[in-house]
Amino acid sequence: MAEWPINDATSKVFPLYSRANVGEIFPDPISPLNASVGFQHGLEPGWRDAFVACGVWDPDLYDENVQMNILPAFGSYLYINMSLMRLFGVRVPGMSAEAVDLQYFGDMPGIPSYESERRDFDENPEHEAKAGRWLAEQVLGATDLAAYDTDRAEVEQIRKDRPDLTTLSDSELFTRMRSFETLLRRLFKHHIEASLKSGVGLGAMAQLTEAIGRPELALTLVAGIGNIDSAVPSTRMWDLGRLARNPQVAELFDAGITDLYERLHDSTDPNIVAFTRELDAFLTDWDFRGPAEWEIRATTWGVNPALALGTIDRMRHVDESEDPEAKTAERASQREAASTVVRDALAADEAASAQFEAVLNAAALWMRGRERGRTTAAMLIHEIRLAALELGSRGVASGALNEVKHIFMLFADEIDSYLADPSVLTSTLAEREKTYLDLFDRQPPFVVDGTAPPVEEWTLRADRHSTLLAPGESITGVSGCPGIARGRARVLLSPDDPSALDAGDILIAPITDPSWTPLFVTAAAVVVDVGAPFSHAAIVSRELGIPCIVSATDATVRIPDGAQIEVDGTTGTVTVL
Image (cartoon, rainbow, N blue to C red; front, top):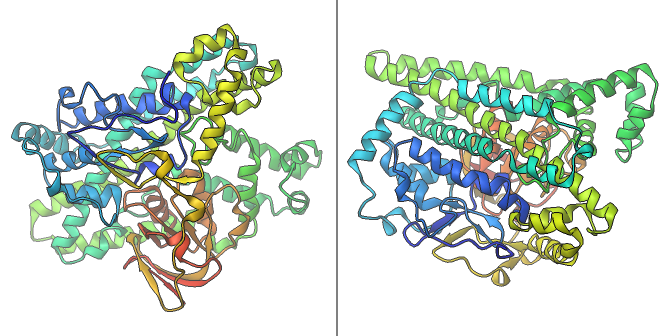
């Protein structure tokens, strides 16, 4: 049985770890079942495969004595090995450790510099040559996302062929959960490859625009790309919000979100039936989406439709001028205008012009690839979630579990014992659940250098305080999407309750994942505590055409909720008015 809470070993050679980036998809602790059967179990080997495929090193670089070289958990919170990411930057031509810090991790004050951890073997001509070929052929030379389309088709078929889970035995349900291991590893490999490639694309774009004296164009050139999977639900929800304006449908919404899904289905009114049909089609396609959706214990839109209906409820009140497709089209127009500016500036240099076109294509292609890979993996993870929930329901019915979600407190090596006699683990799983929920009250260290402090020494979230900004005062982060917006600050710590966000408000969040995306449609701008130009909040903001600032440290505790503020996405500054 693994240690609980989970505390993986740290590497002595690559000792620097960060919560940046991984905090988007795992803001909460990872559950034992997800660590040992699902996400962490699949992503670690997939990420290793991706680094090797990039040519930056061989499999023997990884420490055999450290199970989780790249994605360990400390106190059950996941971390990315920042040392390995920096080594990637060192060995890819045109990149650097500092560029990796900016593109992938954002602004992190107090982080040890790369020079303080540089190793004698970091510069390696052989691997730099391999990485150069990878850069030329697979990053800049790529023209399609065929592998990602194949992945999507395979996972969609699995979802289509999903058996009636209630007819499977307990053993068959666990077998189904474990059957996705090989496929998950490949999906995660592709997702990480696309993530690395899109980061390289962003870095190259920043270098090109800096060279012609127009650095402010870098983010505009990666906005309005279109066909970004993370933004698609926003458009679908927008359409549902328009349909929800029908008087009969609106009357049910006005009565509240509680039991709304059931009331919609109980109605025989033709307008309500038509709306419900569209809603169910949306939930069929996006049942896996929800807060922290890569955590199998998390509640998704399909598991609890009220989460989606709450956002649709807000969207029905939003003015037509906020149409996400129109915003994306406007950003696409700005992108094309910026492209013309760069092309004109490089017209006399044929080689530089060709390089720009390659980078422009690669930046868009791999941004799509990253979100495509991420979404496809979430679809497959949902299949594990559904099987586990069925097992949990049976456990409660038999008296072996106190709550359905206690099933997620199992480790893989306990499954056989559970199958033999579920009741033998009843108290163990209940105690783990208590510890798991207690972890939510603690703030994990943002960076671990060498050894993670014990959980008992972590700051309690309730004790996290900072001086509120006064009128005229500002905080500065990193630009995620240019533009200026003014509005009321709305500090939200979770996307579960969108009712606090009105049209034109500015969303202030700790970090965002795809489940937050529909809220971006109603927001005038987005500000997040942590993140980078490569992170989810920045990517979606650029698609939806709203200013965004990432790495605005402590924004959720320093910006007064309800204050009038100005967000300058170009300079990365938030000012209280």
